[in-house]
Image 1 (cartoon, rainbow, N blue to C red):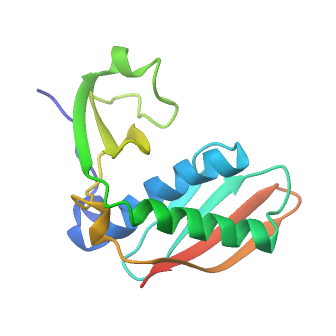
Image 2: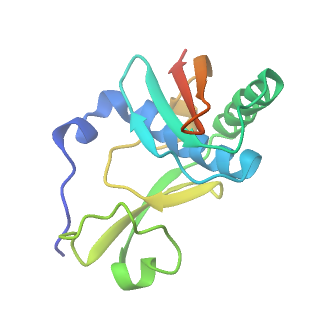
Length: 155
């Protein structure tokens, strides 16, 4: 089976908790704000940042609600699994825009329990119990771009 290979950084097990948390945050943003997945991500072991296109800046109450909801998902101790399917099958289920033109015919789906599933070639934890506690450390709003940037860490 031909598969695309992730850049070495995304195969680094030390970022697996952060990368898995990114999946949970993305699904929580979709559910809470009705937006898409992050438009930009910088995932590191100590702290990470995600950008989202939103209609307006989240209130402090909404930011606290987001943090609480992500931690509730983490606390469910969900299994993180993978599935391999044909691109053709993935087209109706997933956003294929970020898939490179030269991507293999087989794509990898990462599932966080029954909470989230998406195309991904990075490394993840086996269970959300391995993540720790999610903490938003700062956030800012770009009114012109309608972009909300969140910086977070795991403790």
